[in-house]
Amino acid sequence: MRFHVLTLFPQSFPGPLADSMVGMACHRGLISIEVTDIRSHTHDSHGTADDYQFGGGPGMVMKPEPIFEAVEAVLADLDLSERTGAGVVLLSPQGQVFNQKMAEDLANSSSLVLICGHYAGVDERVRQHLVTQEVSIGDFVLTGGELAAMVMIDTISRLVPGVVGSMDNVTQDSISSGLLQHPLYTRPAQFRDMAAPEILLSGHHAEIEKWRRHESLRRTLERRPGLLETAQLSPEDIEYLESLGYGRPKAQS
Ligand code: ADE
Image 1 (spheres, helix red, strand yellow):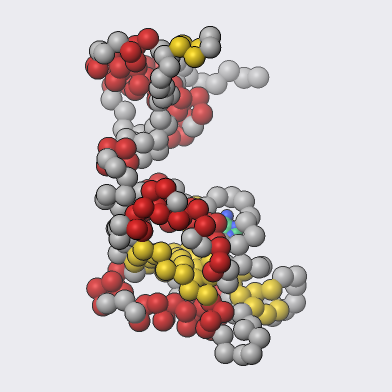
Image 2 (cartoon, rainbow, N blue to C red):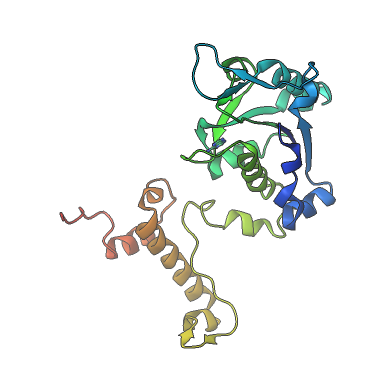
């Protein structure tokens, strides 16, 4: 999987992506992260990549020409099959909100071009005629799309086969399974006055799996009840959730 990042701040990369599993995945050639300085596609002596907005108003707008040229240069470098499957993503707070499902869909592309918006935003013609998808990483405003691109690269990379040691870790993790993760414990079994749950030390695998499932269900009900609407639930899951009050109308306060 190849990521192509287009940014006015190329020195921000690879940043945290150089470390841990993503760094290792780059090293092993499972993924690549190529960074293009949008300013290198400007043609005036000042490298002007932004300008005042038509109609007046605060904040500068990223000009269309360098962004179009940078994307076209990246696409021209890809072979035909990669080019047709390449997604061109604009990072902006106006985009569709990123989630695990979107990451899974994007992980099927062989190449992803990520355009990092900055300043007040990008010229609308980029949005209308160049990008295939506009993505926000949440309902808050960053100073630019660079951190958002890193979040997307990190999330999508761990779905690429071989990046995370065991694929079980990816398919069973929080959210991918549709539920929040159960609590985790490691040694020591007794830490100060805090003991790990005995069931986890019992060696009864079926009982341990049941406990984990119950804890996932309980946590999801308490913290993110909306996820239960789309999670795959067995009749036993529903029975357990009902024992916790799931489905009952909330008490009026
Ligand atoms: N740029 C600024 N804020 C952003 C956000 N929330 N997501 C993606 N890109 C952004």
